[in-house]
Amino acid sequence: MFDVNAIRAQFPILSRTVHNNSLVYLDNGATTHKPLNVIEKEREFYLQNNANVHRGTHFLSANATAQYEAVREILADFLQVQSRELVWTKGATESLNLIAHGLTPLLQPNDIILISELEHHANIVPWQQLALRTGAVIKAIKVNRKGCIHYERAVAQIQNLKPKIVSICHASNGLGNILPIESLIREAKAIGAITVIDGAQSFAQIRPNLRELDCDFYVASAHKAFGPTGVGLLFGKYELLNEMPPYQCGGEMIDKVTISHSSFNQAPSKFEAGTPNIAGVIAFGEAIKFISSIPFEEWTAHKKDVFNTLISEMQTIEQVELYGDLNDNIGTVSFTVKNQHPIDVATLLDHHGIAVRTGHHCNQPLMDALAISGTIRASIAIYNTVEEIDHFIFALRDVISLLEE
Image (cartoon, rainbow, N blue to C red):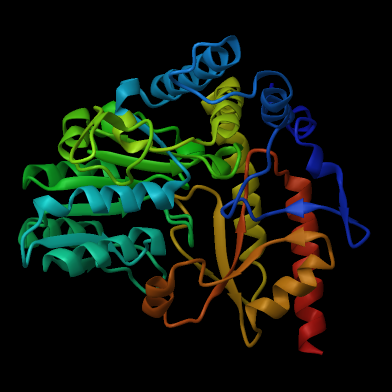
């Protein structure tokens, strides 16, 4: 039997108060909290095992290296890929920049890079810079007035535009929509496109099997999956990684250096220049263990129960307008309150102890498509409860009443 209170007990921060109210944390799309095993693992590294990884012959270095590389194996098993196909970065943003930089030699003027209007800025701006370097052209899959893509039109764009690269999110950070990426990847591969998936929001929530997805690249951030900040992952098919030039140069990524010439290691070390976030990576291994410790069926059933309660209650508030796909959703509700500024609503919610996010959520093209300046976003995680949703709804009604006086 799923015990949410046992889950919550692993997260010390959830027991604190904010403005004399119990904390209700609904900003998980921005970052998730960390369970105690993750916090203690990072602390343990600095207390007992601190050393740089690779090449060191002493005990501490060998031990740190073994722990660090063991997490690569844990992640490979989680995603069903080879460990040599996984590159450590500082986050999904750096991973996307690395890919866009590495694919520069493959593009010619007027080649198409296809994204969607749902994308985070981190999955837009690197491609814009790639287009500037190569003369490529960016096109976008459109959304409707609620922020949902039309699948058949997306397929038609892929078939007609024949893009060289298709880079789309698995799930929207701004709205929570889960995109039909399995089908879109197949359509893209049918015309020879390279496929890039932004999995920042989906890594923990959907637990993708990358072998089944068959995408060429996939990126995510540890901090959105109960792990530390400053750690990211990049999956790339091994042959593609080795065709790409290095993103940064320095120690660790080299094979041989002379004053006039350098040669580089194979992936993944070719892309891991300098000293990495060793403690963060090792602690991320504990986050993956935490995610894996909860059966996926129980995970999804609990989140669906909380999410459905949130949606059904919000639909009873006439001043609220909801956006996004509320059926295929990772657990994010993006909404506005009629005639009220999102910041005013969020500020007053904070005084009830409720943490939500406001603004454009690094989704300005999406907000332009929806003809709004921003939304209020409430995003749930495995430790949120129906009781917290009840408190949120009570507080939201109170805030709206106060603002309308």
